[in-house]
Image 1 (cartoon, rainbow, N blue to C red):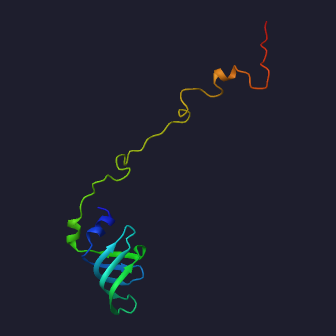
Image 2 (cartoon, rainbow, N blue to C red; image 1 turned 45 degrees about the vertical axis):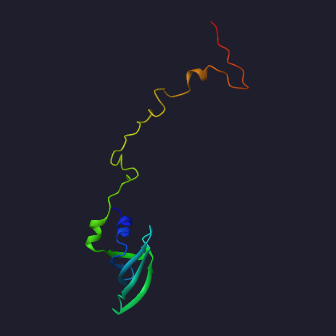
Image 3 (cartoon, rainbow, N blue to C red; image 1 turned 135 degrees about the horizontal axis):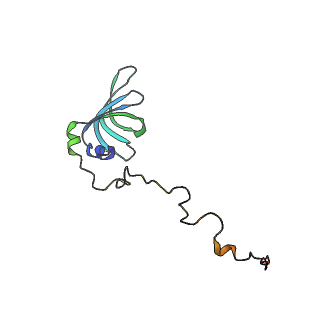
Length: 132
């Protein structure tokens, strides 16, 4: 269960949001997006410092300012399971060992390949072999 699915299921339910600033908003969750930005209607705001209550008709709360979110228990039971597999979940926990040093290039040894060492380089005359 992902938080975005949980929040989508919580639409049109009473929620309580506590912000990082300490304020709390309790009201009807009207809208939510993938960034957890939330719109709450008929909210009751409680200021953390003065502990004063105020009623707000409509409030928009930015997702990264939310510290705590309380939902009704019935919402958790209503969440649909994920149909699409999570990206990378098929091989989760299975790490490859990789290639050992020197095996990445294949079975060749070090140095220049044989067919290349017999060819003369461009612009240079071929080496003469000594006879004798």
